[in-house]
Image 1: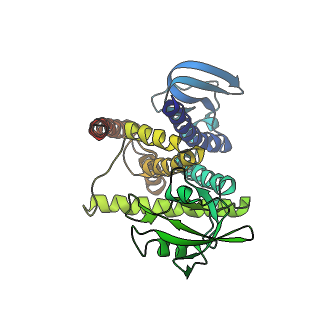
Image 2: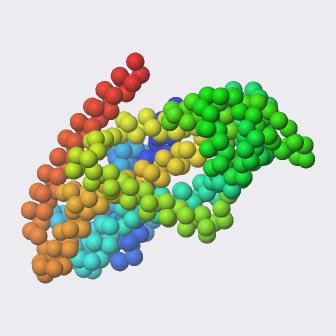
Image 3: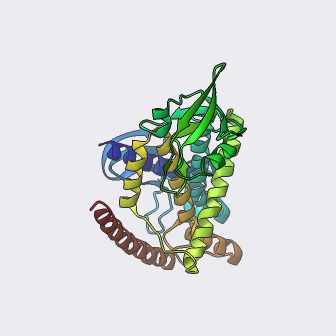
Length: 345
C-alpha cells in the first residue's frame, strides 16, 4: 500500500507540473483552454472555472491540457474568437506553450532539491560530529552517540569527515581506537567496522546535517538539476555510441524504485521524484515524433520556412512516433517484469 500511495503521489506530481507548464503559458499568450485533466479515463471529480474544466480522472497514468484549435481536425467553434485558438498564434508562441511542460519539470526538480536542502540539509564536511548512529551497527554496540565529536582514529587526529573516512579505511576490517569528545568529557572507545556494498569499511555513523537558507537552497537545487541533466545526457550519448550498456527502465521499474525509496523516508522519495522529473523533462525534449521536442522542431521549421508542415503529414508522423514509443514501452515493461521476477528469486 505504501508503494502504491507513494507512486500515485510521485507520478501525479510530475504530470501535474508538466501539464501546468503548458497551461500557464497557454493562458499567458491568450489561448483558450477547454480542459485541464490529471489522469485518463472516466472523470472522478471536476469543476468548471471560467472557460476551463479542471478534471481528476480515474487512471493516474498521465494528463493533458486541451486547448482551442490545437487539433487541426477539430471543428472550429464559431463562438470562440480566432485569436484565442492555438493554431492562430505565432510559431514562437506555440513553441513556448509546448516547451513550457518540460521546463516546468526542471523547475520542479530544482524546488524539490531546495526543500531537501532546507528541511533535511546536507552532510557538514567540515565537522566530525556524529549526527546519527545507525541501529544495530558496530558504532551503536561500541557506545557511540549522536553529538559525539571524533577527534582521533588510531591516534591520528581527524578534523573533517573526509579525514575520518580515510582513517576508517586505512586498516580494513580491523577494530579502530576512537577518541571522542562528549560534552566536555574525553573518551576512548574500540569500534569494529563492516564492509558495505561499495567496498568501504564503516562504523555505522552519519555526519551532522547542515540546513540551507531558502535562497541558497534554491541556487544549489538549480545547480544540482543542471548537473544531473548533464550526467543523464552524457550517459545517453554513451549508450548510443555503445560505450555504456543499454539501461532503460519503464513504469514497473520506476514503481519498484519508488517503493524502495519510500521505505527510507520522505526525503528519499523527494530525491527520486526530482531525478524522475529531470528524466521526464529531458525525454520530452528529445526530437522524437509525438514528444514535445519534435513538435517544437516542426514549429521552428514553420518559423524558418514561413509556412507550416501540412497538418495531415505532421499528424501522421506523430502517430507513427507514438506507435513506436508504445512498442518500446511494452518491451521495456516486459524486461522490467522479468528482471524483478529473477531478482526476487
